[in-house]
Image (cartoon, rainbow, N blue to C red; front, side, top):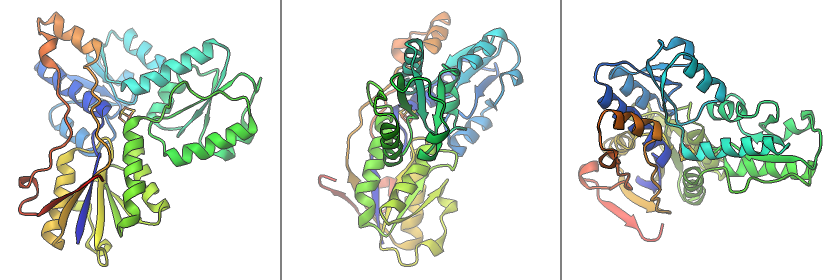
Length: 345
Ligand code: SF4
């Protein structure tokens, strides 16, 4: 068996930043309690590891004692949540990914200009709840082409569509095409809303999965972008499984598999991917090839709210930048596995 390990995979700049926010805050506040509104990122291991270090995750601002620290997750929150936090005098640190904030800003701007916003995404996803909350009167969520018939449109010339950042680019295009057919004058967002990390990870699976017998995506079922990676593999005809960790790997999936594509969602820690690879090596005699399709060098600074908190404690924020490099694949990480880096892929 050969493992084809995809690059890029795993943490994106937004997830890396959000996790660093909680890490840095824990260091900063010593024994003070830290609350996080919603899962900081959609990964069960990341959340559990923080829980074990004393972080409390809540779904309601009311569950946080007045004056406490609260971190808003990478998915963003609505103005109503920010207001509720303010009313309780919470010390809010906003770890919203800047690429989600960009979509919020678009929603605010278009609503002010009198546009109705058709927000393509999953109705119950935290990101959509937050974005819709910026302009609730002007926004309708479109989950599929079937939703179009039930939209209430005041003026088809004053329409814009925006999208969730972690959608399948294929599925989003189907909905965009249907919207354009129904409303030819609909405006597109000024720049693509589906983010670079989603696009790169999906593109890699679309390219590489056809050459493999199976795809394993390391990620949680709560992770939208991880689920989309399994769907894309299935769409190109390669069976795919989404697993949280190496323990979830089932031997009977791998009976006839010669080449297995391994990737991970944007919120899945790299050590979980390495553990999956190790299990494939130890239990199935796999060797490993790294297939690189894109380099990512995007980094986000720590949010201003955290930097302000650091400055009030006399900490020089210039020294607190967390470098975010691409993953280094080392022989040591995989024991004695022979590693082939495939040129150009
Ligand atoms: S997946 Fe994209 S939008 Fe979401 S946190 Fe990562 S970079 Fe930001």
